Amino acid sequence: MTCRQLTDDLLDFVAEELAAERRGLVQLHLDGCPACVALVYSYRVVAEVARRLPPPEPPPALLTRLAELARPSPSPEWGQRGAES
Image (tube, rainbow, N blue to C red; front, side):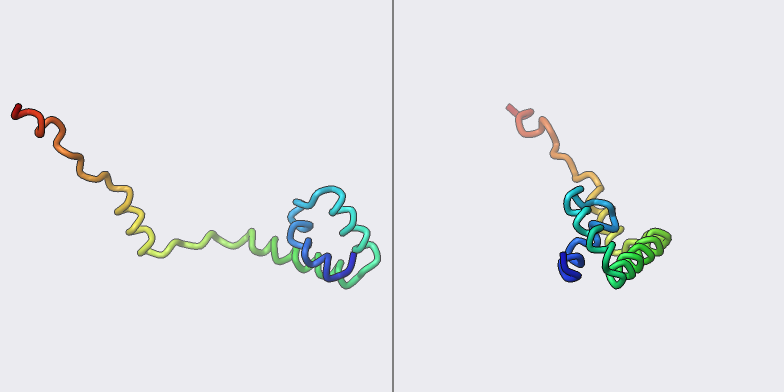
């Protein structure tokens, strides 16, 4: 595995979502590449910092639109059409 190939798998490796065989290949590469070990470390630090951030607030316009969509629509007057017959 080359450094370039490792970067394709880096996010999945840090998230521990790689298949065992692929994870083994990444680990084998890391065992001999200090530059990629540093890259993995930096990704882990960024992921940890991101987990500590508060969730983003949705824009007010989105909340307004969702509230509009959640309102029940007016129901048709059931029975009025056939009541005259």
